[in-house]
Image (tube, rainbow over all chains, first blue to last red; front, top):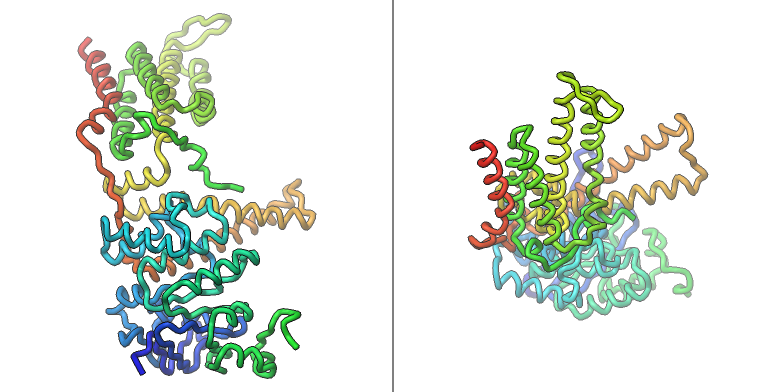
Length: 243
Length: 253
């Protein structure tokens, strides 16, 4: 099999205050896959995500992105390869205009002039936001801000897109539109979510993280049909979906 | 919602002043104000002339007058001080209607009023024609320490976010029948302020994470550098040149 885009082996991590969040996580994601990362609050999902681009450094074990180990020397290239879209778009969009914000990442990679503009235009049109390039982020609706947040990361042409709770706080129509958007993107996706129907719609495979270990790694439909597994790990389908 | 105070200052437009590059305008503004302040105290006619110059610049921005006048409110403390000055200053006395006032005080009062009005008018002309984004770019271009520019840029971006958070906390407080009436309600307001501070601090940490995740290395990248032609610089400095002429004339006389 080809080199995994995301290769996590035996990853363990304890916070400086002694709280251990991860106890040996193994996770492999291959090119073109869309994988849902499920788990109750406090399961270590965010901690795992912050290891993928080297914000947190592994206590034990290793993370590699397309074969490149996540180490301090490789940070810039790793951060290009791994695009994390955080949950609150207000945290992600910090520049005065949408265009500046989308340009921030590629500019940090050294792009300027026409190359930069091409990237920015391509990323904005991939999320259908090209007409709002000169608006200020705080003048956009929440759904628009989430799309722009995705564009800021797409502009870095990542090998894997990591979405943290992409459907949270969206109205049903925006949630559906975001789902359609994610389906059109030609990129490997790891999606952290509590929204199980959304995971089923978009991801063929689901990984359940619970208590700092991988409790299940199976096709999403299998996971959602395993009532025992869901109950053990405090995962629930919304009312009306079971039976 | 507090959608950012800076936004209300800026008025879109197509005037000459709007089109000047922000950094040239800013240097022109600061030079002009420094020269106005440097005028000797009794040079009232020179000051009045420069007030007209500032007025002319404001008119040339074609920003609605009402908007400009409402911005002049920042001058009020100076006006109050200028009105009090004749009564509290010492030195030879003179009669002004029914009052006996200090001659030096009146002189200083006129000088203060003219200087303050001129400077504020000019600053308003700058603020109404320059977007907050361009102001940040101008300061970056003028090599202001990067950290200060970043603090300013983040303030512009997050003032509205923090403001609406404060507003939501107020609504939540009021929804539980809180009424700020007596001294006894101060601890509640203080702890709200504390909570707001902590939330902002945590947001700061999350924003930093998001920046690091996109390859931030400590400097904001300049993606769209400002540029000004010789003509831009010349136009931006017309008021300053007039002020210099006034200053020279006063000292020559």
